[in-house]
Image 1 (cartoon, one colour):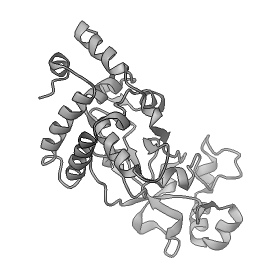
Image 2 (cartoon, one colour; image 1 turned 45 degrees about the vertical axis):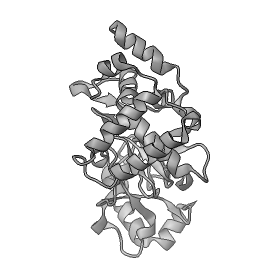
Image 3 (tube, one colour; image 1 turned 60 degrees about the horizontal axis):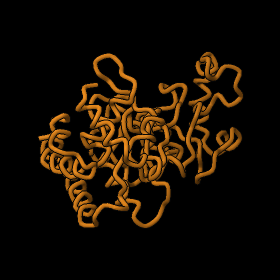
Image 4 (cartoon, helix red, strand yellow; image 1 turned 135 degrees about the horizontal axis):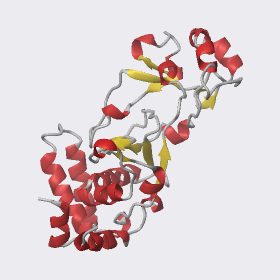
Length: 272
């Protein structure tokens, strides 16, 4: 790295780690997306409670407040309790018949071979860990694409997501604050420099890298600055990507200041 980038790296590295404030988790792994992820019209009528909206990587946009999804994930829980095969057969017969029609296909896959629980996703996530307010990012990105699921309704596959370490008062504001930080130029620059790179410039978002990303501590910044960030993010979520550029530029300047960056650092990052 050039000397000016090394100095910038050292400066950012002095801040506390993201894992001090948020838990970084990874979405479910179905083992067979073509079986367990269905379009809305294919969900058996009367058995909708077994399916949750699914947000694929290609529909995760920067800041975008995702309001709908045409795909749904088979989620083997009823009233937050994991269901067993007997309950599935009895209470959700249409879904059971659908899965039964896919049994041979599933058992032919290495992930399910010889398994007695071939009918459920390979690695799911507990409702209390997945269906909660969270920040989401695609598994592979070229630019920062951190978005927010304030209502905790979406499931994601493999994609990392972030939840507050403690729930309760201030949870929403904390997520909005870190949404701004993670989408900022200095933070993403650091993440990108510490991540695996793939063809065409894609960066892999990995839990360990994200956990150890340095971030400004929200507890020690001035309350008026914190509130300004929350207000700007709230306004950004209301508009399109094009309209949101002015909010993102203002947030970039504020977050750069929180990282204590000078003019030389800002020049390295090409922040306008």
